[in-house]
Image 1 (cartoon, helix red, strand yellow):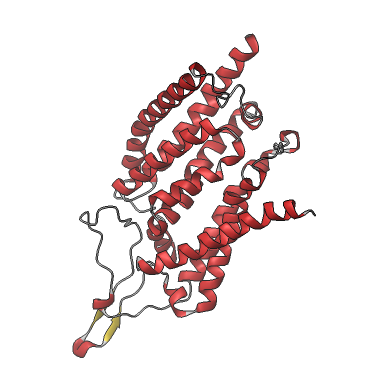
Image 2 (spheres, rainbow, N blue to C red):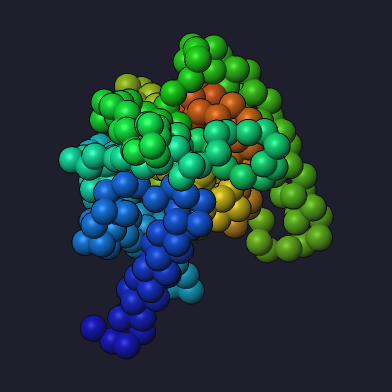
Length: 314
């Protein structure tokens, strides 16, 4: 392995490690550090390592291909490969959660509890909710029975909502508007690049996109639903409350760098900001899940096949 090849692996690994370290520090500063991490330094380090590995493989590794002509060989892809990263995200979240919350009994005085969510804390993420404990007579700590692990998981990742169907409906409506707005912005940018003679304007679709559009309908629908749920769960439900909307958006865009189209990354970044603001407003991820799935569905089921058909006719 040459020094350059090693650097293309090492630099993303260092960026992933730095991001995992920042995530850990940010959780402490925001008082969102899981009780298992407070009780055990080993759990805390293991949690950071697990997240760091996922960030290396799923977010930063495509940076190593910048400046090369290496393109993904779609001929070697199989349908299960499409869901591999989503599976790794779910596995990472599951391990992190168990390290942070499983088998840990909390007992803290009421004065040590974080303040309840408040709209007055502008710009502050507020999804996770801590399990309470109360002070008894004489200041003794009286632990309150912690919620079941399943509910704790839902609390920590933005899955709780007064009405999930209502959130999904809201997300579908707003998601269609976001799709139209982002598409219009991308079209204006592409037109400006074309008129200026800038060669940065894309001349053809990335190889992965036509390959995806040629897959069976059930597979494309499954991929849209999987991306909408799992990616929102990881980037908005997990990362955003802990590192902020700007960094979680940047990481989301980097995770899609393999498409190799700068203009497409502009659209992805705009969509990520919209989804992040939607999660901050609704205090759950469900509206963003619906909006994300809708966008992917329109692109993969309608727009991309139509564009490919027109290009072949031309």
